Image (cartoon, rainbow, N blue to C red; front, side, top):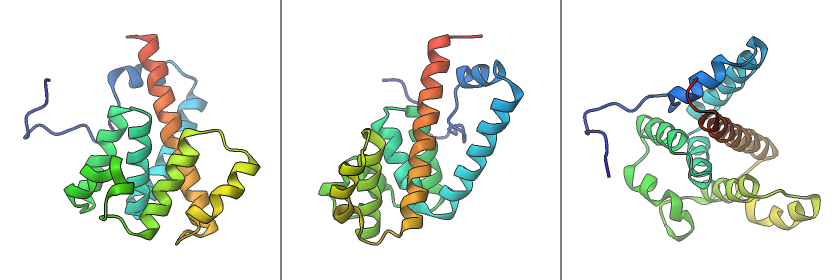
Length: 163
């Protein structure tokens, strides 16, 4: 498997050339809206490292390498311990995550991988209620949706091929 040398920097945005080509083919309003959404998203994950862990976990679930690389890089810059990043995909079996992080990662997996109904949400309440306020859950939902959206847009860009 080919990897970048350790000294080579990963692109901070994690976006590929096809992603840029895709955006350049869109209307200015759509590009501006996506840019605004990403600005809010970035400010949230920089402010709260738990949100960045959630974004990285959702990128893993989406099999989105560029997004995962970007969130892992940001987590490292935020001072996240490398072992916790290695355990992220097996967080349930790891003792390295606290109650709030576990609740946030649980919500990421439930909300990020399924189409929930009101009935489903009632059964989820007890599992994610530890340490998460209504605002936390709302913010987590936003982060999850943005990571999912970016993954879908990157797949669309890849499907379109080079411009």
